[in-house]
Image (tube, rainbow, N blue to C red; front, side, top):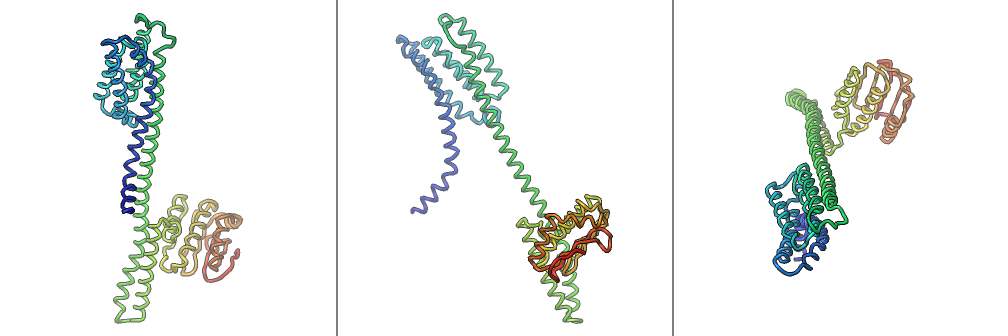
Length: 386
C-alpha cells in the first residue's frame, strides 16, 4: 500500500507543477489589489445610500474581474497575442463600467482603479493594441482629474500611475516573451540535433556496412564454390566471413553509441573528405578487412592525426594512406623534413597510444612521395624517426 501511494504521488507531481505556477501568478497579481484600499475607504465612509452600495458592489466586482481576466488571459503574456480578443474587450469594458460605478461614492479616489485598467489592457491585448488603449486612458484620466469639480486637489499625476503600471506590465511581457522564444529556439535546436544525428547515423551505417557486407557476400559465394574443390580454403573463407561479420557488428555498435570518431572505416571516410576539401589528391586505402579488430581503434587515431597534419601543415598536393594487416602509413608530397618538427600534442598523444599497445611509430621523410611520412605498426615496440 505504501508503495502504491508513493507511485500515485510521484505520478501526480508533474501535473501539480503547472497548477502551482498558475496559483503563484494569480497571487502575484492579486497582491497589488492592496492599493484599492484608498477607494474602499472612501466608499465605506460615504453616507449610506445607493451610491455607497453601488460603489462597494462595483469595487469588489472590479477586483474579481481583474484577477479573473489575468487567470484566463495569461496566455497572452507568453504568445504576445490576445488569447481571446472578444473576452479581453468585454473584460475591459466591464472594468470601465464598474470603475464608473465607484465614482459617485469614491470621488477622486476612483482614479486609483484606472491604473489597474491600464495594466489589464496591457496584459490582455496584443502589445501594440495595448498601447493604443492605454494612452487614451492616461490622457482621459489626467483631463478628468483637472476638470471634474472636487478632483483638482490631486497631489500626483494620475496619468503617471496609469503609464507606470502599463510600462511595468509591458516589460514583464517582453521578458516572458523573450524567455519563451529562447526556450522555443532551444527546442528547435534540439530537434535539429536529433535530425542531424539520425542523418549522420544513416550515412555512417551505409558507409560502414556497405563495404563489409559486400566483402562478406563475395567471400560467402567463394566459400560455397570451394566446399567441394578446396575444403581447407573454404574453411578459411568461412572464418574470414565470421570475423568480418563480428567486426561489422562492432562498428555498428560503436556508431550507435556515438563513438564513430574512433572507428577505422569512419576515419578513412573522414580522411578522404578532409583531403578533398583541402584540394589534396587523396589515395586512401579501404583494406579495412585486413586489419584485426583489436588494432582498428589505434589505426583510426593514426589516420586522423596523420591526415590532420597533412591538411594543416604539409602544403601538400597529394596524400596516400596505406593499410596492411599490421600497419598504417600516411604519406604526402609536402614540405617533408620540416613537418617532422611539428611533433606537437597530437603526435605525442598518438605515440603514447602506440606505446600502450606495444606498437611501433615512425616519423620522417616519405620514400614514395618525398614529403612527410607517419607509420604506425603493431608488429614491434618503441618508436623511431626515419
